[in-house]
Image 1 (cartoon, one colour):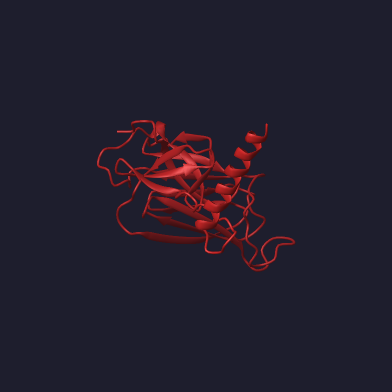
Image 2 (cartoon, rainbow, N blue to C red):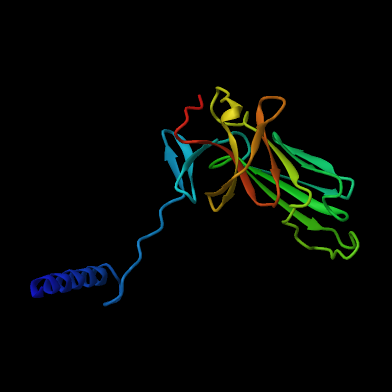
Length: 205
């Protein structure tokens, strides 16, 4: 019994000593650096989800960043930019709201969305108020996969719309194929960053 306790004490002392050796301050333990969320897998850009699953996303061509804004009121409307369409249905907002769509192509294709109320828009709405929650009347996002740098067109049915935060996949949205067969469609219940992706274990070409 005594030998067993001595063994445990020796192992604990070694662990503390190793932690101190790896730290800038004696007696403290330095945490390991976080793993990168964006990587390159077989020549593709790969993102990792909160569950550890990897997703292949498309690298775009053309301009690195494009932005388009439009004021949309309770009647709804569409914003189209570089193969991306944001469709705001009727009554999604209470009054004139400035919607902004930003399309980035590097290091991978990603759409950033924002909505800000216009001053005096709608009953009880204050100008400059950011809107994020569209759970009552979701927004439709359509993203083309034609802008991918690869020449061959992947099978669009393999793609899912991914909700991304700081290059990490936070959620996989329910996704359908666009009627033109060159993109994917998803309902958005909140505004953030989105990108189409394919599970890394699927051959999409």
